[in-house]
Image (cartoon, rainbow, N blue to C red; front, side):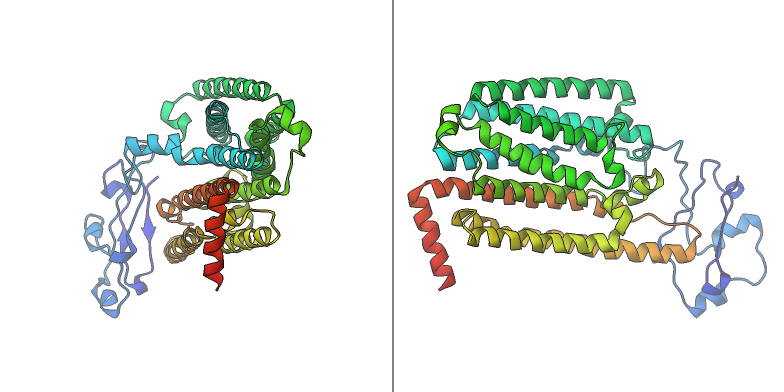
Amino acid sequence: MASFCSLNPVLGLGFCPSISSLNRKDRFCHFSPKEIKFSVSNVREIPRIRPKLSQRHRWASFECKGKNSDINDGQDRKDISQATLIWRAIKLPMYSVALVPLTVGSAAAYLQTGQFSVGRYLALLTSSILIITWLNLSNDVYDFDTGADKNKKESVVNILGSRTATLVAANLLLGFGLLGLIWAAVEAGNIRSILLLLCAVMCGYMYQCPPFRLSYQGLGEPLCFVAFGPFATTAFYLMQMSSRELCYRHPLTSTILSASVLVGYTTTLILFCSHFHQVEGDRAVGKFSPLVRVGQKAGSEVVNIALVTLYSLLFILGIGNALPLASTILCALTLPMGIFTVDYVKKNYNVSDRVVQFLKLLIDACAPQDNEKMFMAKYYSVRLHVLFGVALAAGLVIARSEIGYYYISRYARCAFL
């Protein structure tokens, strides 16, 4: 069926030619708002007489640049290279959610015992990376099944063209990752830690895999918080302590509990920001993420409130001596990155929202958001997550050293005087 766009001539706009007057591969009419000028002169320039079909494309006020999505599946309004798609599919920055809980948990154990096992740390890191890879691959598989990733070119299933191969690879990685975690727990002499990590893995399964798929009910953020916060961070803390030390000391302190809450909080922020660029796709397949429920405008305000809550909580935990002073000060230094993340989300949401409202006045459809810009929102939240986690872990390590703690305390007193 021919694609035809007709707009009100009173606004100074002409007609978009049908398929028969264009190349047969063209179906969709794309136009740039910059080329449309609302003025009286535009109205006068439009002929009163209906033009011939062969002349309409020269008198149109906007250009139709059609592309058949079935034929040119590798192109969008902005061409994305294959290398970029592969980089996005790998999601290398997202593996910080494996690095930060382990590093913070190990630093908290070092604060208590003064010991650190490099071999155990590397084994846990490798196993965690394998499990996060399973999480990403299986997420692509099950989103492919529901149609959520139908237009997501960076999906591993779409790149490889095989759902079965992706799922088999994901399950193998999960198996190897669990074996590594079990070995580390046995080597540390603490079986309780592996129970916490199994609970974290189960949260990941319930998040995306059938029959649960709790992310489709908007419950992904709570699962993410408990999985990477209290479960994973606390488990890594226990694995860096020997069983003998656990007999003489209470294993769970206010420090590790507070640190795990902060790690889970910043990890959840990453997941929340990752929904901004795929609201329309989620809504189309019935995936009721928080942003689908509240909308992007309210979502941008949620990010602002979340950052205020994060640093307020940090200040409260520092005042209450639940966190060392060094961690409180170093984490507070990440505030500029937090402010930048909030400003970026608000700025680019407002821009894309104005574009959407403008397009809705012109065509009888909901135009997509500026997904290329909103896509980067989650990566800025990843940067905040990494900086905050490194600062938190560094503060825990410094607090163990009397010399480092002395200089941090002296700096703090000078700052408040």
